[in-house]
Structure formats: structure tokens, C-alpha cells
Length: 261
Image 1 (cartoon, one colour):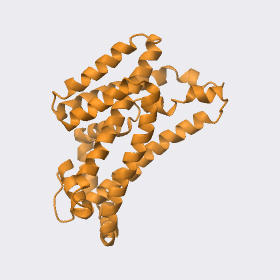
Image 2 (cartoon, one colour; image 1 turned 180 degrees about the horizontal axis):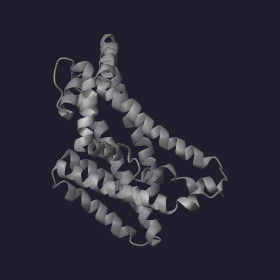
Image 3 (cartoon, helix red, strand yellow; image 1 turned 180 degrees about the vertical axis):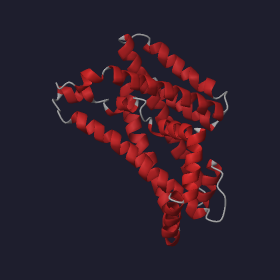
């Protein structure tokens, strides 16, 4: 029910147009990020006396011989490479060529106002996005898990994360976590709708946009019929194909891209 409500909410925003989408995402993502960061910091502050110990354990484990052995084994079996690429694409859309759509969404306004610094600022936004996701949110989540489960085993379930936050914040923590997860789900859905619409608009010169919107919204209901593992595999395949297209385009046009204006 909750998942259905989230996607219905996202579908309504899809029908409001790309300007509404940009405003919604510009509010939802920072708000959800701040909320989740605050929840993590509460746990970290509660376990501040163990913070240095856990940090040293992470460093020692990362540079331990067993980690090297595991890395070599994963490389030989290709499972580590596969999962690394898949999670990188899923988290940051690294190399897929999609996130640049959002970073340059105000490019026409920048051109009209003769803002020559806009390309540089758009690139910085993209860098900061990856840094905050990879170097702030992911380590905070890891510290929350390790600080609270130092003697236990974590199986990777969101219900376990919910239990951790509940033990430190209170019984309303699951609601806060649900709000953040729902907000990230809505914003991600809106971003991908925006990416697809902009790409189709460029390729077809404004044709078939209504059909795309209808098919995109229908895909919400279709997606609910599949198991999450199947959806993740489909997502990984599509992102991999997008990355191949992006790399092919960059290689094909490398000569023109290298020429100075």
C-alpha cells in the first residue's frame, strides 16, 4: 500500500510538467537528505566513545591480507567487478550520461543571461552530488550499523536499520525512516521521468511525449507485479546498456569534443 501511494504521488507530479518536477526534486532531496543525516548523527553521537574504535576496525579490515585475498578472488570470479559496476551505476548513475540532464537543466536560462560560468558550476554540482552520496551518506550508514551491531550480525535488511534507529531515537523512528525512503523513491522516479522525457524530446523534436508519459505511469503498476530482485537485475541491465551508448557516443565524437571553440 505504501509503495503504491508513493508511486501514485510520483505519477501526479509527472503530469504537472518538468518545471514542477524540478521544483519538487529541489525540495524533496535536500530535505530527505538532511533528515536522514540527522538520524544517523544521533546514533553516532550516542556511541561517540566507540567511534574511533570502529573507524580503526574499518581501516584495519580494508588493508588486511584477507581483504586483499577476497578482492583477488572476486576479481578472478568477476563477481566483485559486476557488483561494483552495478552498484555504482545504481547509486550515482556513473557513466550512464543521465545525471548531466539534471545538472544542465537550467542551461537555457544560463545562455539567455550570458552566464559563462554555468558549465563549470554544473560540473561542480555533479561532483558534489557523488561526494555527498559516497563520502557522507554511505559512511554514516556504515557507522550506524557498526556502532549499534558491534557484537551482532547485520543481514542488510531495512527492518534492521529501522530497529537500530528505534533503539536510539524512539518509536517514531520507523516513521521518519519511511518518510526518507519514500522521499528518495519519489525523487528518483521523478528524475528518471525527467531524463526520459528530455531525451525523447531531443530525439523526436517534441513528438510522442504524451505516449511516453502514459507508458511511464503504467510501468508503476507493472513494476509492482515483479519481485525486487528481478527489478534490480532489469535496472542493472538497462543502466549497463545506457553506459555503453554513452561511451560509444563519446568515443565516436571525441575528435569534435577535443576541438576548441
